[in-house]
Length: 272
Ligand SMILES: [Zn+2]
Image 1 (cartoon, rainbow, N blue to C red):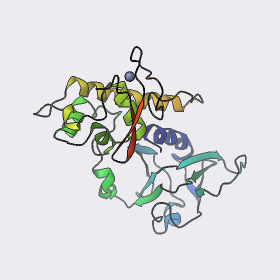
Image 2: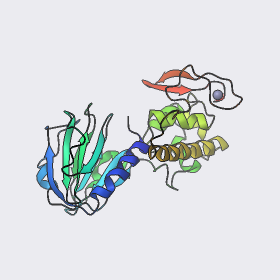
Image 3: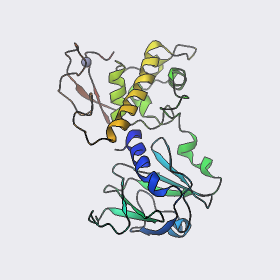
């Protein structure tokens, strides 16, 4: 499932083809993805210019010259393919659901086999009405996200740290993969209570600072890696159940447990 690094990679891929360009044609091959496309979706896009391609958490936020904003979520399996218009090197696929033909000479195809993604349009000035965006926590790679903000968000929370990191109100953009990875890097057990990251008055502890830093590190590394074709050995613990812990001198074995219905991978040897 795409998390912040994958969505950021998609953003960087489609940005040069979209920013400053007009939608010359918009083709929608089905009435819905996870939710129906908004009313008159094609008419509301056609002829409009893309002002910017931005990202918030796992959402692509694309303001248009119409003052409306195109909101895209990749869901479980959504991805974009960009090619020169008329280039048929890549075969059409039954899961190509939306096609944008841009005035930049590029055609952008949205492919989503599992159809948990969606596209929506927020009318002018109404982006703040979008609930999941309004309540979203800080961007983990921004200065607003640090040990202090993480401690504030986790203060008094009786859920596990792992569940707290998946809560988009605590920090945006993290999912199952990078929550597990960051906890391992910070030597923090996913089983601990989220409230243990804050002192009684809600201040950060040393481990909170280590975790905030680890979150930034794993995300930045993943974004960098996605820019190169080298993908082998990507993860420290994710989907490495039964394998030796990669931490030097630990000697532990990666374990898989289920928390709130989701898999967590961690090393009981070095994560406390
Ligand atoms: Zn270990």
